[in-house]
Length: 200
Image (cartoon, rainbow, N blue to C red; front, top):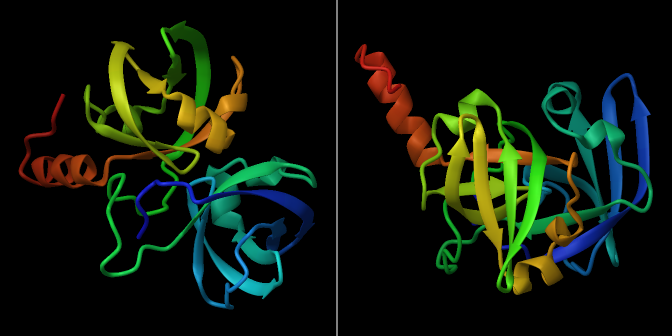
């Protein structure tokens, strides 16, 4: 369980692919990670398999590679990081599972006052559980849906702090991001569908 509040930006030191999947070695400021601990890497919950001073290694299985961008990661790639929520921690963002629901693509970038507006083309399953002023996770960052300007498009607004302290400040048109739809919306949609009342 996570909150979408990024606590560090790490850098991929090595990416090793084989028939089992992908091992990512990531440099980070975390100095007390242990094997078996969960870390969200660009919004995907991954398990630490090795760790040392200033680095940790995670394994990405084939099914996760199918639904994420991890297969394109190489040394030098920056990634948003968040450690798992502890009981008693502040829930500063929203409830994030660390399950990537799909890939979004940046359609348009604009600026309004000191905020950067980003229109994202999102998969149907993410659009279906997104509402204006609801929550969405983009590359692990808890964000508010600013608007839904068209079918399949979600607009987010990034404040200066987010631009400076996450990788989202580097987004460009045509760029891809990991998305996780709001978990409450997903449960409501599933319950309604089970009763034969699929939301439109």
